[in-house]
Image (tube, rainbow, N blue to C red; front, side, top):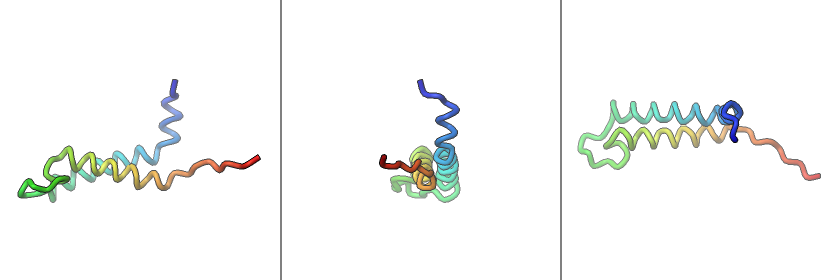
Length: 72
């Protein structure tokens, strides 16, 4: 069974990135949006929120340090 505390501790940056990205995506939809409704990402709040969450998670996952493997 996966230990939730360990998972959150190891992936804290990615989780923060997802939360900040989702918030940013929704705020972009709310304040900028798409007036015509033909924009694929910004026409609906769920689309822009999910897109922002994915981009935020990917961006901050680049900062995550992986353990160094040694050849012995």
